[in-house]
Length: 147
Ligand SMILES: [Zn+2]
Image (cartoon, rainbow, N blue to C red; front, side, top):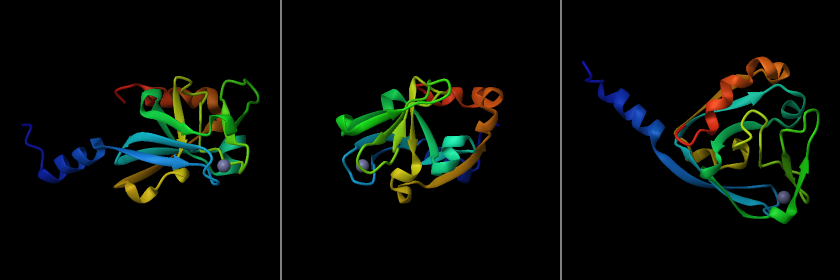
C-alpha cells in the first residue's frame, strides 16, 4: 500500500533536502544566509510594489534566516497598512529580503538575490496581491517553523 515508486521517493527526498545559501544585495554591503529546501515554490506577486521590482518571494521562518552583515546599511520603507517592512540597501537600492505583511513572523527572501543554480526545482506561483485581503491566508503557513 505504501510502496511509492522510487522516482516519487526521490522527488520527495529532494524537495525536503535543506541547504544553506548565501544571499546579498547588489553592492554586497547587505549579506545574509538562509536555509531552504532544494525544491521550492516561490510567489510572483502583482501588487503595486512587487510588480514594479519583479520580486520573487521565498518565504521562510525567522529561524532559517540570518543577517550576516549590513544591518546599518538597510533602510525601511512602509506604506498603506505599514505592516510589511520593506528593507532595502541604502547604497544600491536592492531589496534582498523583507518582513512581509502575510508572514510578519518570518522573512520573504528575494529568490533573485540567491544563486538559483543551487536549486533542483523552482516553481513560480502567481499570487494575487492586488486583492491581498482575499488571498493572504494562502501564504500564512509558509513562516511556520516546520513548513
Ligand atoms: Zn547594496
